[in-house]
Picture 1 (cartoon, helix red, strand yellow):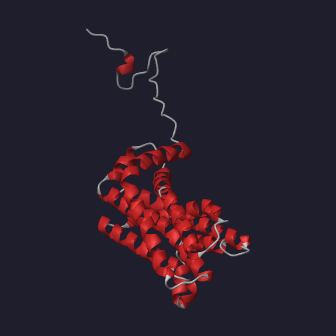
Picture 2 (picture 1 turned 120 degrees about the vertical axis):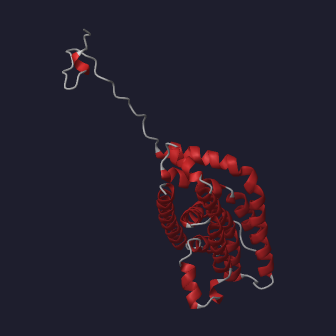
Picture 3 (picture 1 turned 90 degrees about the vertical axis):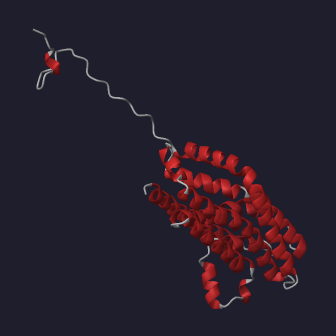
Length: 273
């Protein structure tokens, strides 16, 4: 006759002093900023070699547009709009166009499943990728702005405002590009939407607004990069109105926060499907 402990019988009462099973402790949740820094470094090192030729193309494109516009625009407010719009166009090419293609391909190729298994918040994935792509625009934007000032005879004294224009316009355009890539059902459509967005930044940002019809001006006000272009163009005036410059930068920043929030929501939506 075998003896069976009472604590293993159905309805049995555990013996006094029996050891309770220990509950496994979960690790701490990943915080946003360390996760964001990790994703940013990974994206920056991954895309460094592949994006440098595309950055050269973006810079060459903006410089070529300014050379063409030099035969039409002599100076004044129109020259300021052309130089500012061409500089921000470099940001649009990388942060909007390329980021839309990247997230479209990432969604189609199952790359979102990889990120979903990592202990990082969705916002860190979107912000890290957007920040890495926007970082590639800094050299091209500065080169374009300096070349445009020399071409049109504009002052170089306030080019430091690009320190604010590049991240704010980059955030707004990167959030829009990421949202387009994540919401597009196919990568080809994401590429098309990114190209259309960059074309809108080209036509509505580079061309002087004084020559546009009223309906086109309204469409221009809806483009996130417009306020970065306006802020940069105002600094070329002999006596810039810094209140208006700060106002345009504030609007650009608000649009950037909203567009990145939409991109984060689109990432969550695409990752669970």
